[in-house]
Structure formats: structure tokens, C-alpha cells
Length: 207
Image (cartoon, rainbow, N blue to C red; front, side, top):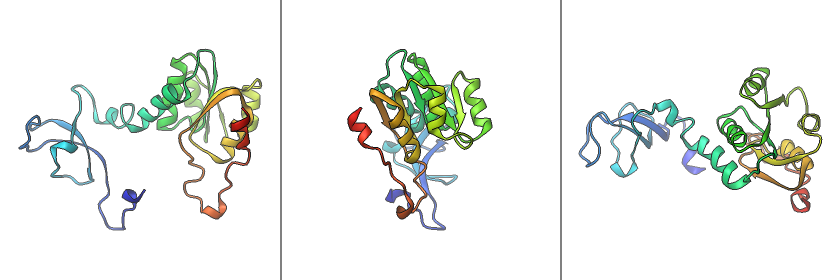
């Protein structure tokens, strides 16, 4: 993660979407909407090789949400890593986030019953409004929520949280089930000595 170690006062470099103001490169013209990895400035001079044109009709917001890295992670993680079967019971942690929500919709599209967890009443209601079952992990421990909503176990898990949530998934996972480990947001800002880890990893071997 060295490329994200931005000193105070520096200009971060990350994904941007901008309009070409002037071009000397073949294939790019003034007015083209493009994506690039570049500093967050109003004006940038970039190599053509680092640019990717935005297809006509797409908005910048779509490029940074349902068509960008977070969405690709949710879609590809479900379809090509978890590889669910129609009728599977699936659980997504961090379900109301950018990646989790795409994972939920992908699972539903592939014929799964989808359960998600989120950290507020508003997020839970949003998930339910889109056709998913959901619970608030701040009001109900993950293991209890899963026992209530899927007492017969889970076939597919898509994990964005790690830690205690991943432990609950492994306990509830049916034999032959799949856990796609995408993130560990419960651990990102925790000092190493305070990280709890996952205490039942043997379940990944046994199941």
C-alpha cells in the first residue's frame, strides 16, 4: 500500500475522470471524457497510455460506481470465485457498501436467496427495499442474525468484514460451501496487537 502513503500537504494520486482540454495523441480529441490514474488536480498532463475513454452515454458517477473497480470486485468475486448455484443461500457482510451491494445483486441474479448485514437501520431498510433479507449487526450479533435467518446454514459467503464476522460465517457454512474473502474492514484501522484474528479457521479445512 506504499502508493497510498500520501504525506500531509501532498496531492493524492488516484482514479480520476476528466475532460480532455488539449491533445497531441492520436485517438484522443478535445472534449473526450476519460479515466486515468493521476493526481487530484483541476488540470493534469498525462500520457495517452494511462487514459481510458469513457464509452458514450456513460456518466462519471456510473464509471466510479457500478462500472468501476468496486463493482467489478463484487461481480467477479461472486461469479468467478464464489461460483454460486441456483437455490444457494448466500450471505454478504458489508452488504450496503459499494462492493457488497453489487455482490448482493449478482447473487440474486444468479438465483440465490441473499442475506446481508449492515450497520444502521437505514442501510438495512435500503437492502430490504432491493429484495434482500437483512439485519443490523450492531443490534444483533452476526452469528445470531444468521441463525435466525438461515438456520439450515449458508452455501455461499462474500466477506468484506473479517474478524468476528468471518468467524460467524465459518460456523454457519454448510459442508462444501464457499467463502469469497474480499476485505477485512473490521481490521483496517486496528493496531496489530488489538486485532482478534479468526479463531476457527480450521472450519475452512473441515468444511
